Length: 542
Image (cartoon, rainbow, N blue to C red; front, side, top):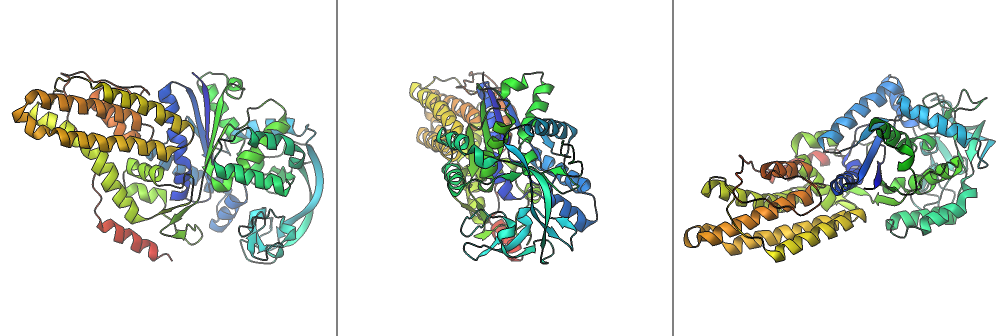
């Protein structure tokens, strides 16, 4: 048994979840369910990112407090994740007392570090909005390529920017020209940690290619020191004398949620938090491409500078971008598929299957309703659901629900053993598409076996052969349920219940003579008319 930490990125609690969030976060649940099935001690944690400028701006627009806004979306997030089957051990929020207490204690020690210093610098300020602006809320033209950009990084040329260097900077909220006011803040000398950060990325050649490339790019361009504090009311008060009116910068406290949430989880089960963050554990971080530097540079910098021997990231599971019917998802234009709406009409395992099998795992992917419907009907229902239904329904109809006698096939058992081994290895490497693809290859072979054996004929011509065919199909089904449990928990749980098996990561065997309960169709067919209906809704948003 090994201590496993799986940290899912914390979504901003300033608006609803869209399919891009789910595409990037689903791998975390697969990892958690797999490692539990193996027998590891899993801490799967995440939460809602409640502080910072985006939440404060949303609150101002709606005439509410930041706490009201963040609490509303936090509850919505929790409900969506629960309906999708995310098996978080702890899903919390950055405004929780546990998180705030942990972060203040962490920062108090951090401020004693040789890597933390004080500096006065100009900060973007909007007179109309009456607030200092985070870098991402400053818009202008890039001084390197002259393209439109935000104040933190240019999407066109990739240059890392400072807001004061932008050409013609304006406020992203109101569009007015901004000014710069000097303010004193604490900084972390990320630039002084270059050697340690290089060693970290070089020690993990198995990270996703985008994580390695982006991290090396940031290091190669020259790491910049980052402010730890800021002038904003909505946040965690900086634990430093003279900084009573300043809060901890959101980027320097939200990534610490992995520590605070896992401590809550450890305390709940009375296990050793320090052991989880020791050298013998394994840590996964699951997020989208845009969050790479926060997990490969910012989080490690904070952990190293705190000087408490914290465990640094092992596995970076960073997805690429997801587009929608060939267009960029835009929350500002409302061009998105919101998760809460998707869950009203479609099955959670269907949603999970699509984003795990077709999502942006290692390259950008596009969600299309045509692909979704054909994937569901042709693969999930047509291959997997059909094999289970045709096999078990046959037993219920012709054997009164009793599993017929038969003998195991050594070759099939060998394939199943190998499938558990290879699938587990692929999951641990973050190759979820390949893992799922291997299982579905086996499902297609199982359907071919059923067709070749023709039990509907042998039922009358060779009863022993028919019984043997059905017995073997049941054994295959039981193992498919266990193999697919990390990916498709809702349907797998039903099958495990029908066959009275657990979901441990090992080959299953169901004895002959067991009687099946009433079963149901695992997946409902999606009418093709949905394709036109849903795409028309999206076109209306453009």
